[in-house]
Each structure stands twice: as C-alpha cells, then as structure tokens.
Image (cartoon, rainbow, N blue to C red):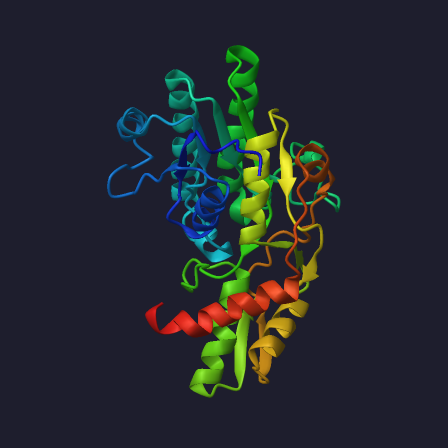
Length: 315
C-alpha cells in the first residue's frame, strides 16, 4: 500500500454499481477516508448542471469515472441512441468540468467494445483506431472512445492529468442478472440455475456459440484500476484484462457443469454473435503499473454462481 489515497477526496461515479462496489472496497482497503459516490437520485450525470453541482459539493482531488449505461448484445441493439448519448455526455462533461475545477487526476474507463470488429488477437492498444467497432455495440464503444480523444487532447493543451483504461468483459458476485440487460456470464448462470429450479431439460442461447470472449473477475479489474490511478500518468490507453479467451460454446458447457445443469444447450443462430474474437494484450498494464489478474476463471465462476444461488430470490 503506497498511501496514495489516504489524504485524497475520491469521487467514484457509478460507485454504487457492480464494478463500483469493488472499487470503493479497494479504496477503503487502501486507507482512503473520503470516498464520495454521487447517487443518481441526487446527481444526473448526463446533465451539465448536475455535474457542476457535484463538483461544487464533493470537491474531489481524484475522479474515477465508472458510471455507464451498459448491457449485452440485445440491450445495445435495442438502445443504440441512448447508449451513445448518455455515455458520451457523462464522460465529456465530467472531464471538462474536472478540468475547470482543477482536479488532480481523472480516470476514464473505456471498454473493449471500442476496438475494431476484426482486431488481430491479442488486441494491442495501438490497434484501437484500426477500424470500426462491431456493429451491435459500436455506438457505445465509440462514445467511450471519444473520452480517449478528449483525455489526450486535454493533456496536450491544458496539462490535464487524465488516464484512459480499456477493461475487458467483467463478471463476478453482484453482477447484473436481469435478462433484458445482462451480459453473457450472468445470463448463462441464470439460465442454468433457473432451468434446474424449474425442471427444464434445455436452455436456449443466442448466436452460434462459435465466437470467443475474454473475461476478468470484477475484483481483479478494480485492483487494476486502482493501481493505474496510483501509478500511471499518461493518456495512452491501457488494457485491463486476464489475457485469456474462451469460446462461448465452451463457456456455456462449463457453466452448465459448474451449476449442475445436465440438460441440452440449444443455440439460436438467428440471433447475433457479436465480435468474432476478444483477447487483450495485457503486457502494458504489468509494465506500467504492475497489474496482473489473480483470480482463476473456474474460481471466479464458482463464486459468481454461489452468489446468484444465494441471492436469486431477491433478483
């Protein structure tokens, strides 16, 4: 522990959310005494006047911007305009007002969806501008990628200390299990556990299953974000991931096995697969701020499954 956070006032937008819970826990572990979370009922971070009021009220030294409107392929396909507008307006205005209020450091969280659809594997940060993102989540990915442009431009013109991180798909206890907006891991866990509860002999999954994804346990991602906040001071983007990938078909079979579901898995190929492959080059995170993911995939999945089983009645 470096003591970096002990005397800092740290605003965590989205701090009440999934990843935010792990980041605020990590801040407490690091001795941060002033963790400030703007609740959506008090501050609508899409609105400039609410952002100004948040800065006036909270007076942060550091801003970690996690708040986002997110979802899986279905949610992205149904709400491309909303995902573009809200994510862009939150990020752009938070950075601008952060500059005007003189915050010491701004940490912008991007997304793996910013990468081109056919990025060579493993994805290297230098390739983020080499093509258009996968169509189903391009509006979200491009909105987030504009924060990289802003971060670099503001450092160049104003000397504003902002960094930009590219986390891969997250999962873990506390994830979003709402079928309308969940990502693939919580969706598959819910399908399998609910099928067992209901006595169903099959589950149905989107796409062909013949695409790959990389996943990082949310607690590991939070550690990476906090290490970067402490130690990294450049606007060049840095990937935050585990550096491994799995085929979605194999993922579904693994989750079925870990949950105890022994029925059939049906694939609806009329639904989109999304990006063909995802795996990040994670060497820069290790080089620049010493981050490596620690949680094995099986251990992370078991913890997530156990959490859903214990909490599904209230979800």
